[in-house]
Length: 314
Length: 289
Image 1: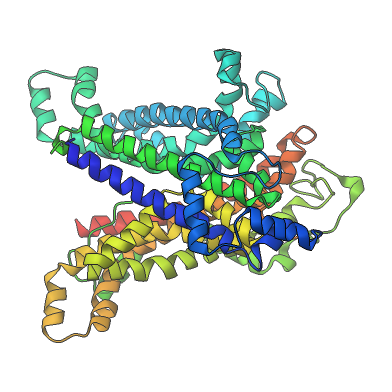
Image 2 (image 1 turned 90 degrees about the vertical axis):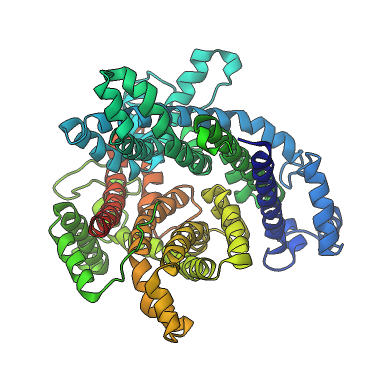
């Protein structure tokens, strides 16, 4: 991918993030009634309301408020949590590792499971394996991830105690401990994406397998796993990667519910807590941070795209 | 989310053949029949539900299936089957709200962007990219945080989240249709823009829009279930399959299989929506090729 394309993509990402910042900022402005009064709560005294109005800068013109807020955000300061009085940046960085572990492992599971199943289905096109995989994929897309987690917990953590039912252990406590906590939630989270990736992988691999150069390779005597590795995987990876990029946001959203079922103190739990406590500053930080992750993930996808498909390297 | 490309003007006869082809597909008939059954159950809930969904019998808490309670009882001794039937109302209503909002926002914007092009296209495209870069559920949560928990708020928020995906489909289809020679001909003979859209463009993008809205119905139902599970969607005493799952989950160690009924209902309904969407896509794509 040439430099200009990278710059244009970066520019697009920055533009999107700026629009997201407007949207998140508007969030507090859109609070019904007087924002300071809403935030202070029903039992607050007039002095409290005034203090909050001043602290959050509501007594300034909106444009000024926005640029001051944006300036803080750009220097990594998401403000102070209204409920705990702690720095939102700290809260986010404490919660992020759990959510990122969960999402990354889910992506890994989705990729490995989805692409393998899709390729097998494409190679065995029309056979019973293909039909089984296609049906399972259709079912998989319809499964709510949090219900899948409950079903997975049933044999592994409820009826037996093979794996912990709730909680998260950082990887510093040992890979095995970390994995035993994360594996069920990540599987549940990644399953629907795996199913969708399987469909796309099957579709694109079927297309690739029907192309003349595959027949040429077969005529040359190439076959089996070599052919698949050399030609099919790489060429059918492109649509799959695009789909994966679209799934990052969905997985981050899905992790909110998964974290709640699995009792993981990640970003999702932070957001839920903030909503229940009407902690708007933390919510703003959460939405903005999530958007940054999605934009960065899509940039990475774009770059991968160019690396896998030389045709895009203009 | 690739849209079927319209290359020929759609006629009324085409539409009736599509319907006939659909009715010959067993998967479509089963899925459609299931949704119809669900609709009937939802409408006639007071007649068909064996119990009052709110009637508590504390002595009969967390029972397994029995002759009296076919799907058992929940933590307050309420009949799960009756609650399941009543919640079917929300399972159909909630997705309709979201998808309705998404259609109202996404379809006109997509038409405008696709047919007009230029700066309109760039601006709406950027807006849609922005919404797509927000984790959907997170955005819905933020809106719920501002407007307060509740089913309608949550579903309107999800509708805004879904609008970009419809926008993209409509824009793509409109872009394809706009280049067709029959559109040019229609304009050449003095057809007004409004008439061109109604008579020539809309019928030709109906199929991809129908496919996308059907699939969004399933996604919206899952989102509703997630939000209600988190306590941010439907509020007690009303219940949805999502909030029923939350109750079942809280009691999972006492009644491990309580998570099955509501979850199964949810999966079957989403599956039905997806099957219908997939069938329409298949049939239309096959006719075009």
